[in-house]
Length: 370
Picture 1: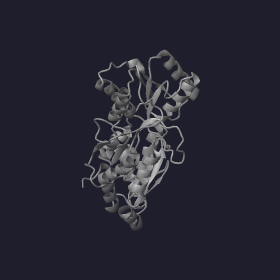
Picture 2: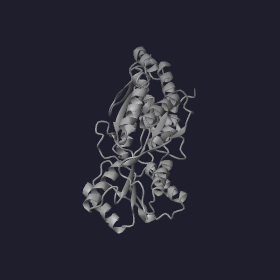
Picture 3: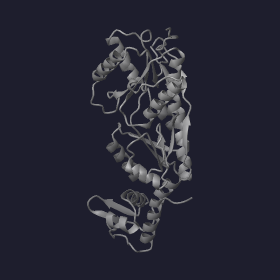
Picture 4: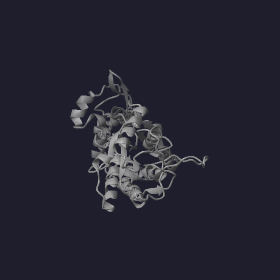
């Protein structure tokens, strides 16, 4: 198997220690000097040094330096690293019963006897995401599962790891043009299916509400919405797509009431709209509150469909939106399979999409008459 760059640096430094170039007690050159010597980045060097530390060759002292403490490996640690289950880092933006909990269940249960997984949340903050990725590198994880905070801004660390063929799998996103494995629902197809459902029921004017979150998932759903119009040879009105819902985003500083007021204004500006597609379940809940505020009934006056929905196993009487269901558990379990395969063969990069499922609920009129 082709060695990764940090492994090559590790091997060369280990040989220098075992060959006497650096004796026990010697201080290694600074990180900057080593980066120049091996022509590698800070990320690559730190990972190589962390591996040397784990194997008992060096000690790293903040603001003092890196010192050789042994010229032979710590057999106990080396054996653990070689034969124990691989350590996997997982970065989620956030998770709840609407989206994320089942995905995590799929990952954790499917990896139970095959890997250890550490889960951290970025809350959609790109700087926090960078910090977590750096922590995982310093922990010497064997691979990383990540639900990125953004599809438009890709972490430089992620790009560098990809360039080194480091085992990576992106969850619920598509990073087109990048050599990074990914697995998600076919969100374009989902957007088309849910829009065509409304046209089939007789709706002529259909709106869409989404957040301003910079992720490919939402862009794909909007594209599917547009394709649904094309399938029915119906003109697409760009002003029917409202993209300014902000309270549903992680770390949002916009109040729920502010977004409800925006939705009210949208509905009053477009009285001809008889159905709305919400790209998230929480946006559907905001629409429901906005309708209540202006005396509209769902589904009598307005049909509403959405993506994802929490289960109501113990409350059969609970209101349920007609919605797109993603195979979250399957996404999680397949992601683990893909990553473990990459750990063995870094060249095995795949991009997979799973089919969506439309679930009927209580939020759509059975038929619109004109």
